[in-house]
Image (tube, rainbow, N blue to C red; front, side, top):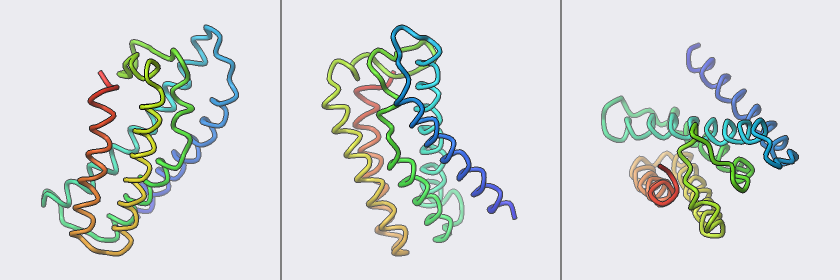
Length: 159
């Protein structure tokens, strides 16, 4: 029952973030702090979901928790689902804040940032494919690729 509740909670978060994302894309943010706050909440919420799911898989691969292929499939599906959202909607120009770890370099080289997001999306899809196959070694390799894509962006664009 606990897994079902957790899955339900994650699904409701994903739906909420998708709805917020479509709303964020329609907000005119001319110096409107409230709009930026919602966009920052959107991106931070998505990153929290990604982190939670990635850590769960990582802990299984490291032997900190028992490896459960079904749980890995669920976590990988959630990662791929979040990666498929319009995450860039959460990074409108100049949406900097003391409450955000996003660096201004994002907006100075947005094309590179977009490419790093595309790389992340591809890595998330690869992880999901590996997880659905049930191949633990494949999941391990795909997690390394996902980690590289996350680190590639965070190293340059996150405080």
